[in-house]
Structure formats: C-alpha cells, structure tokens
Image (cartoon, rainbow, N blue to C red; front, side):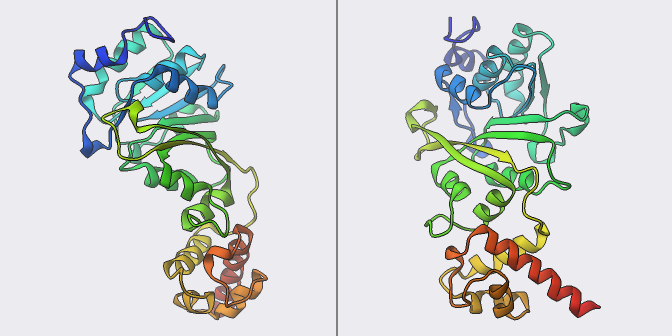
Length: 286
C-alpha cells in the first residue's frame, strides 16, 4: 500500500503498463508519492476544487490530488500509453477523474468548467513547460479561468519566472509573469526523485493571478520587453530603437535614464513604457 491510497506503487504501475518515459515527450516521472502529495497540498485547499493537470503520466500527482480531496481532476495526457494507469485511478475515485487524451497546447478547458474557476497543478513536460506558461499568462480577457497555478519547472526556468530587476535571471518571462501574477518558488525537488533522472534540479512554483494588474496592453508590453532584453547588454537608448520610436520618450515615461539597461528596470517601468508606446503610435496614426 502506498502512503496516500491503496493503489499499487507507481514503479509497479509503470512495469505493468510498460510505461517507460520518453524524452521526445519531455517525460520525467515523479514516483515519490510523499512528494506528489506535497505538491498537491501547495495548491490547497482542494476541497470543492476543480484541478487541471497536464501530463499526468502514471498518475502520481493525480492520485495525490484526489486523495487530498480535489472534487474533480481533469487530466490532460497526450501519451496513450498512460491512459491505462489513469483509468485505474478513475475506477478508484469514481466520478472525480476525467481523462482527456489531447495535446495540452491545443486544449481549452473552459467548456468543461461551467464558468467556475479551476486550479492548474502539474509536473509539466519539460519540452513544453515555458510555452504553456506563456499561453496561460497571455489569456484575454484577464483575470483568467484559473485562480492558481502550481507548476514544476527546471530550476533555471523557475528562477526566470520569479526574478525581479537586477536579478541575473530577470528577463521577458519575468516581466510578463510578475505583471499578471504573484510568483513564488515553493521548494526544490532533487533529480534523484525522478525516473529517469534529469540532469538538473526541479522547482515547484506558485502563480496567483492579480485580479487587476497595472493597466497595460499585453502585446505592447511584450514588444517593449522583447526589444529591451533582445540586446540586454546595451543601454535602453540602443535596444529600444527597434521599436521605431524615440527611446528617450519611453525611458522618461518609466522615470528611468535612457542609459540604463533592461535588467535594472522594474516591471512597473516596462508597463509605463508600453503605455507610452501605445500613446506614440496612436498619435502617429491620428
């Protein structure tokens, strides 16, 4: 018996279903049910919650979410080999696990939610983790259909998500993530906890949507951040030229000197520059 339920240990499940992890799918299975329970608890309280889980694999996190009280789990898995183990979990928790065989990047859960918010909790496949996060951060209109994300990333990616100005990892992803959400690294997980073992440490990150982020056009913010960090070693007066506007006007709007570099400008500064970019463009077209 495992630590959280009476289903077989995950290693046995993997053997029964010949579910070897595939690098092409970014799979690294987390087999320690104590760790999966810790991730599930980080998204709590789970009672009455609907949880979207991406890439459940053999179902270790799925089991933890259900055992800890999630009212409903929608598990999105593109690997058909994992459907057998997930169906076994569904039988153990009748009426509470819905299995969707689909590509997570093309999956829209909103028709299944009935207008109610959900939580996203996942050990994301490494090869699509950042792309999925950017999609979820780019949802329009805002606030989104989820009220919390608890996600596992490679440590390096996690640091890029939570970084603030003057941090080495600060960049475009941090600007978008911290403009729209409150971010925090909760804890790390050793490579030894996975099968196969990745070469890097993983980190669990919590992102909570801000109900009312600073007013700003998302696309303009992304354009300003892309230009500024596209030449991060250069001053703003050089890196922002690619936007075809006067860099000095954008820097002035952010109340920073045009000789500053992108990594020293806080998120609020990027928001101010994005608003000024929209104003300049509107003036040009009027």
